[in-house]
Amino acid sequence: MTLSTPLLAAAPLLAGLIGPALLGAAPDREQAAITAVPAHTAKRSDIVEHVAARTGADQRRVLDYWTPERMAKALPAGLLDAVTDDLLSGLTSRAGIQATPELSGRKADLSIPRHQAAARPGTGTAGSRPSGGTVGARWITGGQVAKTTGRVFMTVGGADFVCSASTVKSANRDVVVTAGHCVKDGAGEWAGNWTFVPGYGMAGEHPYGQYTARRMFVAGPWSRSGDDNYDVGMVALATSRGKHVADAVGTQEIAFNPARGGQAFGFGYPADPPYDGGHLVYCAGRLKDDPYAQTRDQGLGCDMTAGASGGPWMSKFDAATGKGTIMSLSSFKYSDDERTMYGPYFGDSVKALFNTAEHA
Image (tube, rainbow, N blue to C red; front, side, top):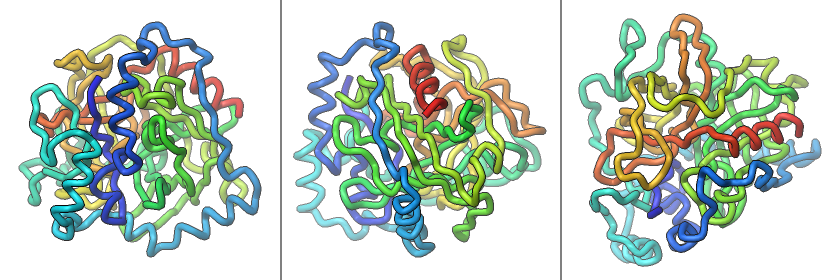
């Protein structure tokens, strides 16, 4: 496995550029992939846990950290205009790749936005009804998905990032699923100040509360080497306003070992142009296997950008109710194909991850 492009988005200059490369994790990924546990042989109990804001004081500290100003600054705007050549040179030399990699079959390590500044036809626009085949449009239909999907705010290496996540039906009524790189920087550090805001609004509204992380879980292969086959994180949340997140916004179903292929709807809060991070966006289409066979992931036609990482992919999705079954999530894109998103297969290891989180 080669280098990946997690779809993070961040406020500080460095964060908007490099994602996990910020902590120098990219070279470790490439080396560790040689010895990573294959996807089909991973132990179901191979789970790594991190205790986050468990006490009331810790939770208040995290909530106080995310002022409206910090949340607003988490949106990347014109970051490349301020980048110096020396900075880019240093970052790319650490990653061992060119600043704008275009190698067929490689996953670029730098999260440098290369998307068009203006929306393409059908991109980021609202339609009169949900489409079963779109690479990106604003979700305006409402329903359950507009409440269960939200933005994640977190700090890694001193930089503030944003991702996407979704609630799932769980025994403790506290679990959200997101990308592994939105929880832990591969073999690097865990994210701090981790907070989930369901139904996030453009002006920073949090109509259903803000939920800090109590405990965070990733699979061992992700924690050891950033193996993209395991780019999944499960987070058990604290309550907000005295409510479990499931009681406040509802949940989506989750499925494991589903049939490959088929129709899927993907959701998230992309923040790089042509998107702004303030609106829920969706993609829809047929799933396909990784054409380079570097992962067991499946691809979905989707031009969502940084910030969409961790957003849920659903099968059996009912556009009228906004309910479906989560069976993957937004993880990475190949550098030579900006219009296909890839998501990990939810096999036994993800099932074990979920079973652990829902009883945390």
